[in-house]
Length: 247
Image (cartoon, rainbow, N blue to C red; front, side, top):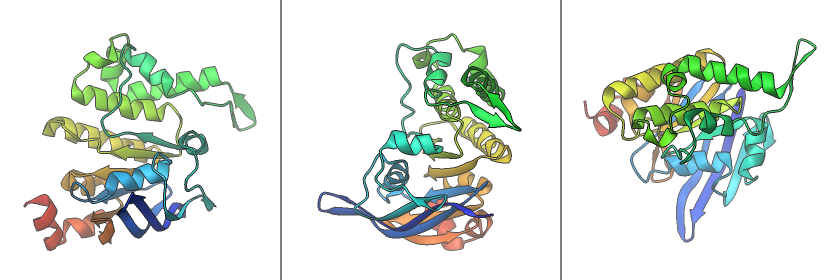
């Protein structure tokens, strides 16, 4: 597999504070890659810089070999990188389905085997796929989105990102504030999305659940990569287990 994302010598400053200190990482096409670490390690800053929400001070973010660093977020999304943000950012006053359809705003007709798929048909296809991943959203598609439980809102946030038909799905803390059983369900669905051909870059504090599904992972400490390896390798790293997993 080839690298679909390459981060090269990335530096991010917040005023006089250097949050990201020249990191390098790769995301292979069709894989799940995780960025782990404690609060303040720079995880969310890294993924937001990749999606264009945060501006880099130096370095490159290559997507399919093209440097996209510091482009506007909507232009990066137009290339196929969609982020499900930390905090979910559910749109108040809209139903579940209306929230999902907001994610489809930039869809364009798609050509498959010489046949053009209209935006209307593509939107329906994606909506059906999201409802297949998250049946509870179909059940509650007319319900006001803000009345959903925390876990259901997280499903909605991921589903909304999928409605953009991304090549790369960027997930920022999908387990934040959720009960353990809901976390397990969310991660099971993330693994299923990967099996269906999506590339996933996930930022998480829940290292144990993330490493179970990650093909590769990077551990950040104060803006630097302290460890990296396959999910299996890091699960068997005693130092990492003691420091981050508490087991």
